[in-house]
Image (cartoon, rainbow, N blue to C red; front, side, top):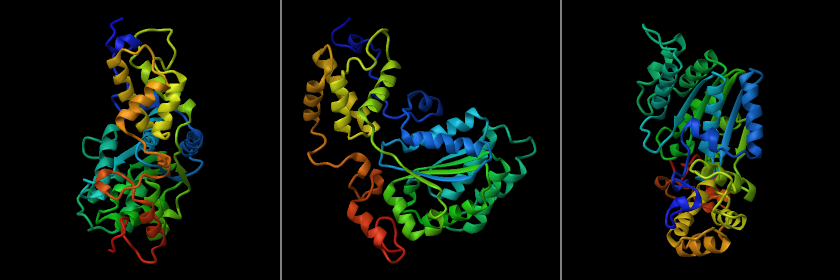
Length: 349
């Protein structure tokens, strides 16, 4: 095999270049089950069978797999022909309620529910919401309309990704009250599932206790074990494999996987970032195998993970929402102890 190419390792290319799987199809292929997934499957099945309704919060830092769990929920809905609405809350969302109402219409169209003369009856009240302006709606009425739509299409899933991006929005309190009303309306057969940073959920607990009190399950994501990291890497490598009968993680040996997972502090996305760089270095120096020594040398060149850095899933110190990171621990404590209503980042409203 050529010495300076991926073919040296029986690969067509670098499988770690794409850090995340953002489609329903890809996520089911590359997903690695953790203990939290067993509970999620039970919740999905109970909602699908209309035995229960559920409000679920999935928390964790960037790259821990929050979006992936929502996509797994969307995959379950697709497999069982359920109505589902997936909506990304971004820092660029000018009006979250308006965007969510539009997502309902998009999902209805994708499910073939739109008729020649218009959409289903339950969609009409939401169409009116899609024309509301930021901060110019009644959260109770909005919550009732969304809840009624989910009840009418049950079994149904409403999946809200990265709710923490509402932190600096003028809609943060209005939308939280909308969700509170929604949780009081939904019936068995409906799932509301959202992801956010743990610190944002802590802020909501203080500032919007009515909504948080109705969350049935809070599922914090923890870091990967070495075995889980090994399985994830094997799945990614298999997608680019052109030679059979190789070790699943070749050219990475077990010591290399351990060193990478330790350097990533158990964070799946960070694991891909480090594996990407190490594989590139191995190709450049024409190494036959990647072991712990090569990983450590590569990480030293990147100057990553300063000594004493806490595990990634315990929170990443930062205070810049635009950087998509969590606030510092001191800000989290301040938010949790605040006697008055405050914004997520500590500014009074």
